[in-house]
Image 1 (cartoon, one colour):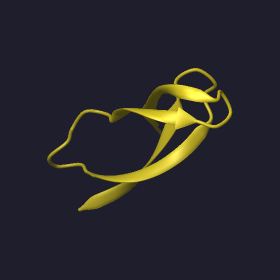
Image 2 (tube, helix red, strand yellow):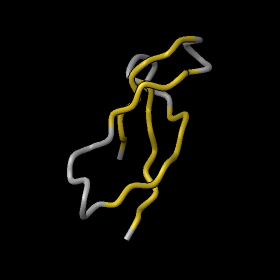
Image 3 (cartoon, one colour):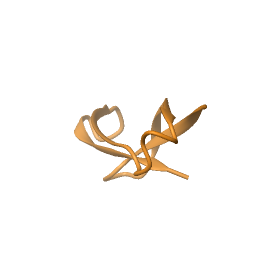
Length: 49
C-alpha cells in the first residue's frame, strides 16, 4: 500500500525528488531536508500534490 509522492523545494517550489510512503502508517505529509540543485543549498522539501 505504498504510493509514490513528489517532494517540492520549499524556496523555489520545484519538484526535485520522488519517494514512496505508506499512507496507512504515515498520515501527515512528508517533510525532509534535501539538496536542491536549483537553489544550490540544502532546503526543506515538502510533499506536493
